[in-house]
Length: 129
Image 1 (cartoon, rainbow, N blue to C red):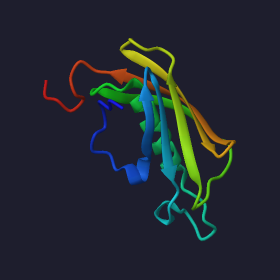
Image 2: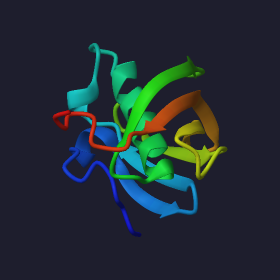
Image 3: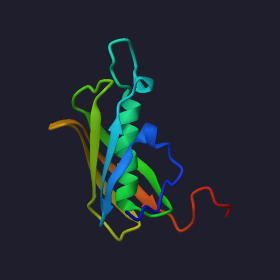
């Protein structure tokens, strides 16, 4: 895998890439106790969103990719101990504006879906000028 973006992200919180190639990525995340929202073991949706966002960034796989917008739906709850896999596909490769579709699964059940609008900027978003 030739990963060109988000090199210092904490993969324990956003997932571990298992495939990155040609506008597609798959990222796996173990749902840990630290992600729990309450005593029932429910995972906070922000971690699932972070997994999906990271998968979208890897599908574009450019050093200057940033998220501009997202339209998402949480379909089922996730729990501590679940293993989630995000599958992302860039539907508009080779453009400055990328539309990336991401689905997240727990085994065979879809738990999240989203469309992420990503931009590739000429320079890093925090660069002066």
